[in-house]
Amino acid sequence: MKSRFIGGLLLIVGTSIGGGMLALPIANASVGFWQSSMFLFLCWALMTLGALLILEVTLYLPSGSHMVTMAQATLGTPGLVVAWLSYLFLLYTLLSGYISGGADVLGSLATHINIHLTDWQSSLLFTLLFGAIVHGGIKHVDLANRALMFGKLGIYALLVGLITPHVSTTHFNLALGDAHLMSSNIMLLITAFGFAIIIPNLRVYFSEDVLSLRRVILIGSLVPLLCYIAWDAVILGSMRADGPDGIASLMHSPRPTSALATILEKTLDNSLITSLFNTFTSICMLTAFLGVALCLVSFLADGFKMETTGREGLGLLVLALAPPLGLVLFSPGVYLHALQYAGIFCVILLLLLPACMALGGRKKFTKHYQIPGGYWTPALVISLSCGLLWHEILQFF
Image (tube, rainbow, N blue to C red; front, top):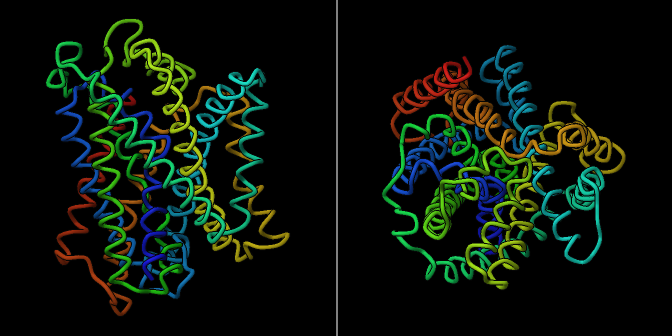
């Protein structure tokens, strides 16, 4: 069980600490460290509540039930439609972002060994190589994720240690920034804590051990929060935020991940840090891609009542990866935009819908686990979700 507990933690951490982590310093550069850290904490608290609500709802139903089944059982046809649309939009959007970012990193790494790949070649190669791991199921993804996560966390610790001596409050004052600018990037922070999509898979993995599931969710979600804050501190504290070569300018770059690596190399002039950063970037994209792709395949299998193995599994994999790959082929620089739009669907699928399902499910099913706070907790989550969605509508117009 200890091995499985560690595996569950790493699946949550791996799903969270992905492409979104690389985008956070870019999004937070104009806001400032302290203000963005406060927003990160609030987003973590809210998304963890949503995750616990999903845990409550998934325990109403037989093991293997995914969001489609959960929504239909608790909310009927309206819930079914919302679940289908929001889940597909969310995961297709996330996969588009991760394929775009992963292809950017893959192309950059290939250039270092004198292999020049076009955008479409990098995207296709990334999808085919790592889609094969997803086809092997959660056990294969878990094994690959464990190896990658230990490497990623080790490299992360090295990077933070190596960059920390370059942090200077005179070069970039960590206390400065405009908190109002966070309003346009809040959905990117929400996306960075979108780990709850993997909870139905974890319920199967842990054989309905509620105590372990709750501990995995709480501890697994706290690790990304601490990593994000430390990452923002060293990146924002060691490089300029403003100007044409500042981090904030990368919000409009078609290749922000490789551009951030270039700025880091120019600023710190340390080849070891640059090499570690490129490796870290690659693993971040890969672990996020594996977790999200696995969730989408499981969701489609639940929705179409198909097996995830054999020919049916291969068909589901193609159905999961072909649409986001097609989007990236037509729009290679979709990375940051995809993560921001994904935040909208995160709010609907991982906050608003679970809270509504919990309220509906409590009237129909026997409770094996209930989130603390009674009816006030889901009501609070519904209110905050509606507020975030209304904010995005105002931002759009």
